[in-house]
Amino acid sequence: MKRDGNKLDQRSFHRAAPPVLPCAARWKERWSSLFPSRFTDWLLRNYPRFTIPLGELPNEEGAGLGLGVTVALLALTAASLRAGRRGDPAPGQSRSPAPQRVMCGAAAAWLAIGATLGHEGLARLLLPFYPLALVPFLRLRGARRLAAGRRGRAVALSCALSAVPALILTPSRPLWPAVAAVGRLRERAPQNRLLARAWEVYRVYAERSDSLAAVRRRIPGGCDLVGFVGTDDDSPVSLWRPFGQRRVVNLLYRQLGSGADIAAAGVDVFVARRSVVERFCGPFDAWASRLGAEVLGRARLTVKVSEGADEWCVVRLPAGAVPQESRQKRKGPWL
Image (cartoon, rainbow, N blue to C red):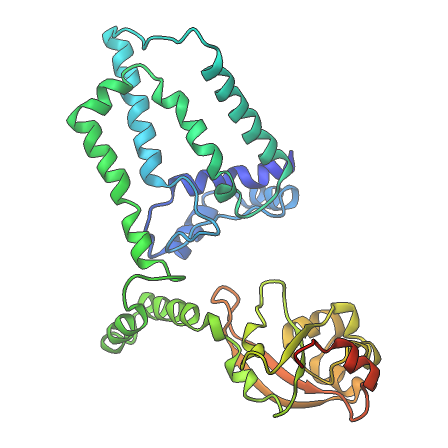
């Protein structure tokens, strides 16, 4: 059940998180300081993937039910309690057991997924089950009265409008000239940390389709086969440009320890993320010396704002390190 505990807290935060939270980092720090250190240590020891998923804006990877729908459900619950105190009749019950079976099936599926799948995007993956999870609230006493009244319509309208700011401001695909507008505001208030953070996030997202352009320019001309060393979340699509003239080969971490293993992949030039190499092979420059490789260029890039800037290097193995048969084996039909 540890997996479910790892994600139960995140689903709760996704329900209560507002559409826009400019000071998310400060809220995280304050929330963590509410608990004694002994409890926090126990929590991290037993639930190592425990996190507080609060961000300035929701995104598709971690979006959940949202504060708007949560407030609407709380309003339905409050209306049901008031209706019970007034003695309003309960809604008519269907003779068919289908509604009860549907609700029980949704609850069982919800618990099964939470207990077996440990994933940061679980709130989003549960999206198909949300309509079924809402059925019990819609069957509450007083739900029909609330939905038909002005208050119910105001709650529904507010719930729908709460998603608009996230749709417009989301960094991955903003519906406004974010980089230019935030850049102008930053020029007027260069000391504002919030504007600096917003500009950095929008800039990095705007360059994500060609995030390694500075590294690509350091690849020697005529190199039609390039290796790539990065994390699972790093995209090598920049290195394929210009499309149709170059092929990119992902190198495995276990291949980095030997120049012969790298050459067996058919590449003599590859792009490597410094932190990845140092995680598996020790200091970067010492590793390059052991391979007898030459560093053709370096560029410090920010691929993800949460990870900060990191150094990317273009590395070339010694001349003749790659056998001709290995290079031919890795070529595509159009190279």
